[in-house]
Image (cartoon, rainbow, N blue to C red; front, side, top):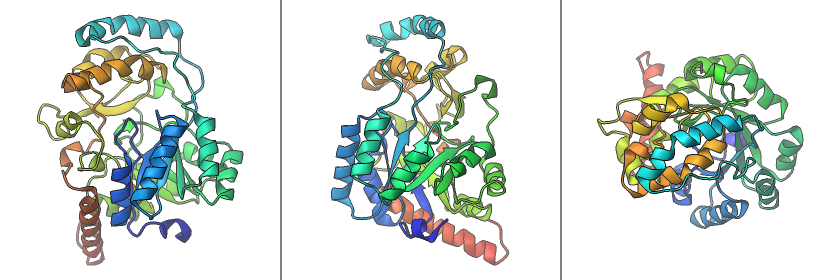
Length: 357
């Protein structure tokens, strides 16, 4: 990775931006102060909400940080399929005594307004999910001194990120928790994602820009592995979800290591887009029937998820988690960065001495 970017954070450890209230300023600040790169998640927030969190984060740390933005989504959902799914969810609404949300609540997540804020109040790093912005957007952020990253789940998507002029690509393996950052949502490709180590190696041979590896990473030894495969840094989400500063619901944190939740699956049940979460009742019952309709399904199920959380029912929540969730450690975020850095150093020393990771 270009030295100008890696100079922003001493350890090659990036805290993934987790939308929905998880990546709060306190979490990002703790990661930054410990030597990693903390991220705020602008997804599902208004432009002003994002700006207020940026101000709060700046009051907590003077170190560089990042902000993640969702790309606007094209209109491709079948309204009839959304209506059928809404009918299927009527029983959930009755059970939780909640109304279904308005599926037509907006598609662009306030994208343009957020770009205005990020140009007028520059931050060190901005990353994009669900696609790559046009060259003009990247150039505008470069003019105000911002480094630009974008997620990719295939070598072809990585090429698009490089063509847009981004400073680096986030290689997101299929192991990753939460939403897959595919540039196009193609239902026929569901379940065909590439594992992280293979993806990093393929992208390394495809583009010349630096790679941040993301997907199922929970230990310093794994960070050493992706660095050896060609990445310049590792991005961890689920590992930080369980930390003290994380804004995740307590039920969500507990579920990561709860024996009731033994595995994860990619599902469209909660949002209409493939996302990896712990398998619970809602995912089992509705996942097979959820249409490709993001963000319509996200808006539709939002009140149900909130009602389930309020009722203390993890079986109705979106329990986003990566495949390594059982390895989660309930530590302060800064301490987790230090532990990961120590594990990374030990793994590198072992490799240098001819040992195994």
